[in-house]
Image 1 (cartoon, rainbow, N blue to C red):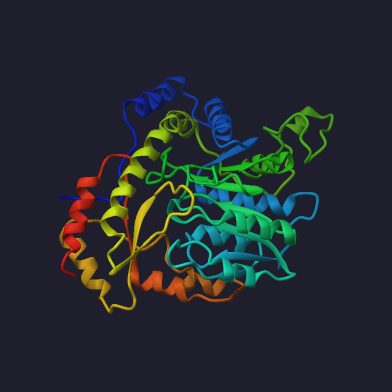
Image 2 (spheres, rainbow, N blue to C red):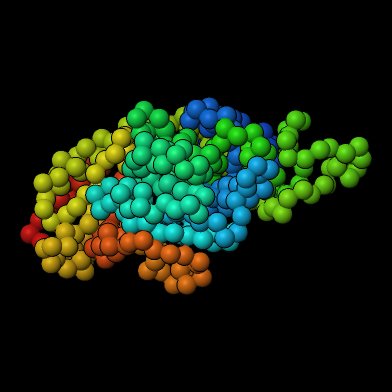
Length: 386
């Protein structure tokens, strides 16, 4: 039996959507992208959505927008708190815009912030907290939003791994001033490549639209608060107001997204069904620490950390999985402090103990929006005797 990390979520509906776009011969960002943005924002209970060509690009323009807002913008050298474990492009835009990163350790059970460590890390210099709900599991948002409110700190949600998760009934990716999502192949819904930013702030919404689109005025709201229109329409059509990028999605991405979003609830139901089976198989297995659910996880994957007290060799475990055809990988990007790129960051570290344990002892297996309980039984049987 083969147990893959990821599988396609497309069928004939997505393929027809592609052919429909092909028939129009219009592929650059247009009506399908706009319709998907509006539908996505409504689904998650937010006012505005801006689609980009990836979740990484969504992070980039979301960070940039916070530097160009009129009131109290971020500045180079400002302190931002980040978790030790996340994907690389959670961190890169922060570095690229000159922010000082303060790394905080994770809780070994949830894989999200250790809240006690997060509280200790906040200083008078802290301007922003980046909350990353790891692999579908919501952060402790009651604590985090309280810290942000009490200390006048911006909350940035990187929700690229956790579409559809909820904390106290509220979707993750709707707690922050800016909130990012990914629609890459292996994620909860897929538009080939893609990402989105959600916000309720009209100024940030218009900044995001300009930043993804060369920094020009095209596609701005009639009452956009980020610039004043001039009388010369010839110049206005190609007027640049921000140092932006070209990170636009295409019409194919938008059209596919419209179909995929309709299926998200069904995908989540199956992922959670698989998760209940996985937890039942491994909850009492002292060899492994499995992710403790906070709120309602959207169960991107199944993480397993070999109990560091038992002296089990991870290479032996991974070798057994490889021989059995069970695909596996590092947890997200592991501890970013263990990667070469960190030498470029302006950063400090409060503690990293649990992040190192997850890096050295952890791995994850794929979850899918189909019934994989037989593959989970196969996993359980494969790991017996180690």
